[in-house]
Length: 189
Length: 267
Image 1 (cartoon, each protein chain N blue to C red):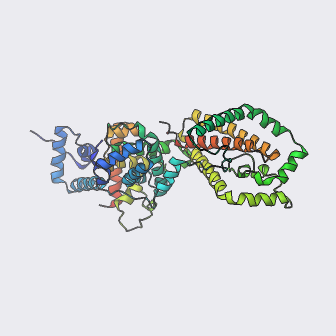
Image 2 (cartoon, rainbow over the protein chains, first blue to last red; image 1 turned 60 degrees about the vertical axis):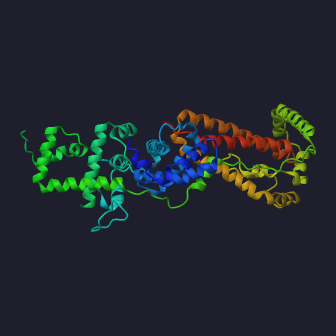
Image 3 (cartoon, chains in turn brown, cyan; image 1 turned 180 degrees about the vertical axis):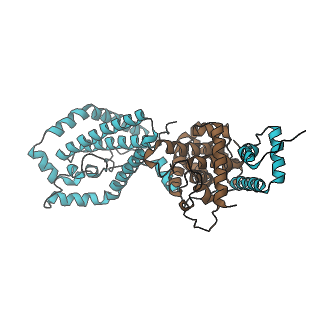
């Protein structure tokens, strides 16, 4: 994974963050709150972009930190904490989508056989108005959106994405290319 | 070295590989040669490069509100004491007395455990006018736990609060007075169980089905114990022992729900 895109925030690096993580791993909830505040925007961003639903993303963000709290003692420091937390967030999103059939529509299970973006699905878009990239990503079919977010936004490699999504690396590349083409069309560049 | 020319269709077919840098040297040269002479494909590559660059530079996003309170509630799962502690058995004056306290408390706890099942059973099945009379005439010592409203309990609150229906009685009026100061505690306890139950219900599909089934089965056992304790309390509301039994059962339910709410997802 290209950790540069994950670790390049000043809020999440440095000695104090590592100390807070260590304290939180020992059960210090005050330290864990500091960890939360340092990382919440990053975690929320990946959740929001993957599910294209801010309300659901807030629920998932809470799930991520509750999960992190219960698993923090397993964090050994082999990777950057931000990388560990980020991967946890992605897993929470993907597992929630896979396991919660009742929320299929919330997770965006529209057919992936979409050849162009349905512009009307974006609440911020009206005919004649250019979509911004954020809204265009939200309008992508779920499969293409997840691959695009994981690869182009979050910096994961195709092999990592394939493992996470249970697809092949070739499938990940195909989805990525399709996502970019759909975005280009939506953005009318 | 000779470079084969390609048209836009072939370039489109190879575009993904071109952007990923996965073309063979010959294909790469052909693609670059095509780009040098095709405005349409040059614009396409430029746009896709820009999308990729813009995506990598997207900013972090902030939730609409602070999520910490919800997280803190879930990871802390505070357990509110249901009833005021019993009057001190001893006035603690020194280390020796504290040791004696622990000895006595241990002995009492052991005795309570030993007689729990039998007494609960007897009180549950034995109904007598005398007990009903006690329930009416001695409400002031009834713990508020006897009237806890547990949302997911199979037993309505009224079953644990005898004489609450119908015309007011001296006993029911006194109960209201006695329990009014503890209402926030009762509400907090109910809310806590309800909240944890909601979390467990929401996360149930993320758990291994066998684990979820075991949790459900254990919750059923605890709910049965709660129901039995309440039935017994309905017969003898003044019993601190029965109140303790109910408290213990509710504590176990909270602890189980708390554990269930924090269980990791199935991977």
